[in-house]
Image 1 (cartoon, rainbow, N blue to C red):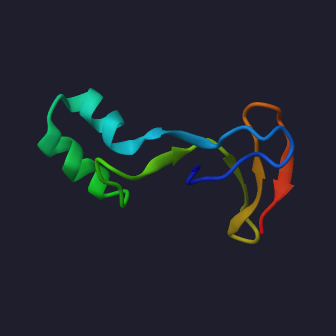
Image 2 (spheres, rainbow, N blue to C red; image 1 turned 90 degrees about the vertical axis):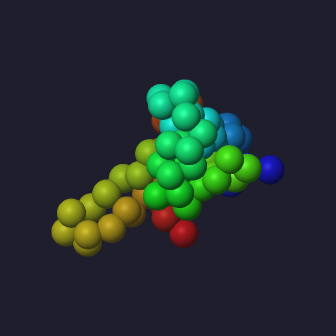
Length: 78
């Protein structure tokens, strides 16, 4: 199951890999990976980076849409 869902156009999985594994590969330390992942609300067992690109509107001061890095489809925020 995908934490970030799927592109509504091409159905690409929008999970971008384990946050914990990313920090473990960077540091080589489980303790450091635990601490860094915790800052993102992730653990060794859960927490994925998201691949969808947020489209931000400065005037509204919020994300207004998403963009798929695979098919370049853009869809509105729900």
